[in-house]
Image (tube, rainbow, N blue to C red; front, side):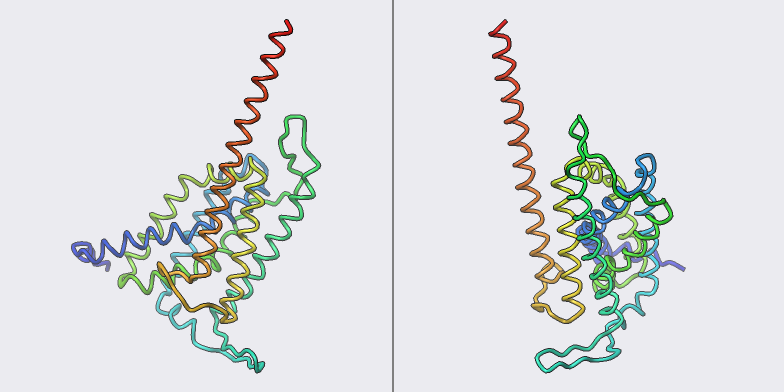
Length: 272
């Protein structure tokens, strides 16, 4: 039986709002991955693919939270490696992060190579011709749900550490995913429309993969800010800076192109 009386306390509401914020922030990398993955779908299936992908990701995250007490013990050592200059005890969490990180690096590099391979194939309207490998809807949803296991480990462990009640954790996940569902199409279309943003997103995915692998190997600063490792926070800030810089460049190019067209149009009028 769910005890709703907990929502009469300020602590519960503070925990809920904090967790919603963290779920959205920590879900940025997942949204980027979903956008890249669903871009492999036929155009008419991309919208439903994004929604189902996020719904599947939400289901995986809720299942994770239902095993919250078990997740806490995922950090218990299974075996250790000692190479003299480096030693580390591996847990289930470390193994998942290591394999997931390796996959993200592979995914990022593979997609980057295919993006550059598609660069010469531009049609007359300067739109990117999608000649990449098309995948089916079940494969896309399965890939997104599988990778959400990797993406959600940090946020789930954070939720377990911040909130005392499972219902608060689940509500935070549901509200955050609904928020992301509202904007997933706009984010995905923006990434697909601007190839430079797609390249930036793929570099981001590969970088997150590197961070996950380093974390699994115990190679971290040990410093945490806003319940995130300093390294991951720095990557997010670097990504935000690069994104803003790219937006400024795009705005400049658009204005420059418009000015050039106006000048050419004015010259043509003068000739006539």
